[in-house]
Length: 109
Image (cartoon, rainbow, N blue to C red):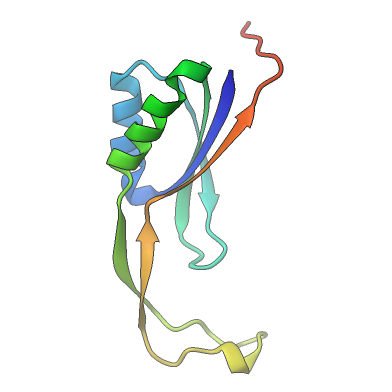
């Protein structure tokens, strides 16, 4: 058994959630926030049998696409002025960051 932890952009969250339900994959959704863009994310925690991990990864890949987005300048207030960007820049967002961890024991009550 594995624990798949997938951090996805909120825009992809509903699509992935629906795909997981359609394939009878149980998941717990947690609201989270990214550190770089300070944007909303959704973290999925999925307990899954070893032989179904690749299928779950395929669902995540199919439903969480990266895209380009303009990022507004970050305020230099309280921060290092050297890292201040005075104009909007295009950054890649979306996709998914996925961690796969072994599960020693699983109980369901």
